[in-house]
Length: 437
Ligand code: 4AD
Ligand code: MG
Image (cartoon, rainbow, N blue to C red; front, side, top):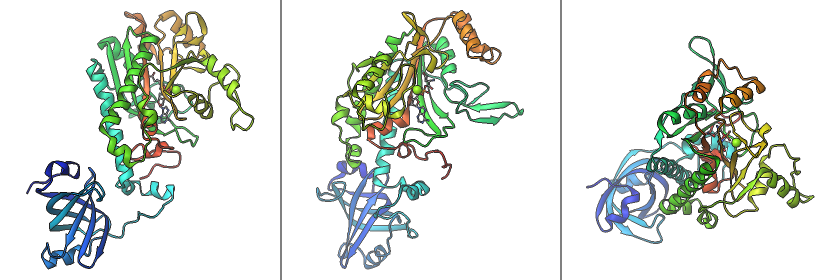
């Protein structure tokens, strides 16, 4: 008999198959047992009827507990009332293990309890669906970039210098006792590989020792950083809107069942198509002043200050699609951003804010490529030219305008899944006060 998965049952209607998995839920009533069966690809109902199986099998079935592991064999029947839409008329049942009393029951549990049991919580239908959507998003990111000729180049995780400033840097000790830092961004390295290969991207873990507890921040998160030689700020934004639209549309197409499982209303996601609206930072500051109401929990900001999460939320609520906020003040952005030639107080960079209140999912910019300007910037920001010498070399040997961006995988998953916290977007979240499991 063929071993198939729950997700494949549609192709086996009327045939006998073998399924290997776990008991998601179980109930028995005298002559009949109902096993809600899961195998990681979905759930189906398995019915054990006393007349269809040997008596010892029926008796063994009675011992099943939640999360017991088992192999079943039987005929596939379509049943619209059954969870998952298919039912197995069980003929053979092989118990692999009767599970000990399972801590997560269908009743309500608090978030901390569930996070303490994250290694088990991921078995729930909702959490498994989110992880499958995460996988779809990851694969969509790779496919989009690979189809356009981008080369995946991995920057180091252990770094000798900081990439995004010192504030939330993770320090450790290198093998020779030199100070070393966990990567906050691979950008400086993809700038180098872009000069070697043209269009590149990195896909890797990123570490930021964020001391604040928010629903958008992880200590360890995954970032995709495309970097393109000869791209301008304009080219960069165009690439981003096509990239994000592709990801969203592919998830809608391929993971409709999972989106349904988690109860995601997809009305807004369907609108995610290029072009995305664009406003400048200055316009955003004015917009916030205009829409602010006395009862709001946030205050408008003066020009020159950075947005907080509530400001981003308020801005996105004014738009149906993701919105670019471009040309931030030079003072509040990273050293590598190219100033706007028409107004050097602002940079040729943009944040992409996701709708429905989600806020920043992408940070990107055109990079400063002029060696003299960059030298001045280094002096201004007191960056050690010794440490960044190799980065300066990129400007000495055939420098060209270039641009790139970083998209946070978890924030993208949170938005597409409609989750209110990033902790459910990654198998094992690293948060303030949470390093286990
Ligand atoms: O805006 P950020 O800091 O940009 C950079 O690191 C650039 N070097 C990227 C580049 O141009 N190559 O971070 C980029 C994105 C954010 O928009 C956000 O989605 C995500 O990374 N991010 C986080 N996600 C989860 N937890 C955190 N603590 C995050 N910090 C940033
Ligand atoms: Mg940013």
